[in-house]
Length: 113
Length: 113
Image (cartoon, rainbow over all chains, first blue to last red; front, side, top):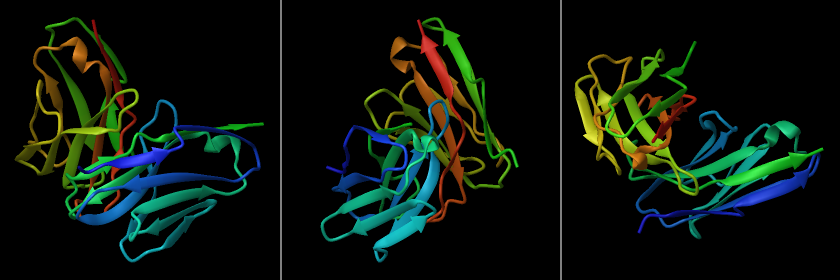
């Protein structure tokens, strides 16, 4: 069964601290993996798209890693800011088709001052 | 650029009523799609379109109709609303290529009583 599992479900950290969010998937065939940020009351916004051959990709203070062998990805946030408070959604695209996106349930991150 | 625009932002319907959720994009994207987001679940695909005049069903199409008469617009119709359709609905679009990011609207929160 094609699944995307994210952990933890929720996380609270202090401003300025780092954190890492996890994503495990069982989607096959694999095309690419995406991380989205969703602010409360808004639509998801793309952070990164990683292909099979990419191990690490950065977008500012966000760094995503991908291990296609173990089918795991992580999103590391450095020097967190209050504006990082959001849900982070891991998405795996199956077989190269835009219609075959498998969404995780997301990790809700709260950054406290 | 406005990106993906959804209207209305909020809607309350009574069981059995019909309505249309509007979605428009100004990025000349070929691919458009509708998702619903429910608490504790990942986004689920309702319907999608790979171009004007072409639509197809996603994971949860029952109770919803779509049409794509122009590249810009992709309305979602609820013919007879049911309480199970209470959800937040997101429209998304992309260039439709394998690594094209999805651009989401900011959602329509629908309550069916």
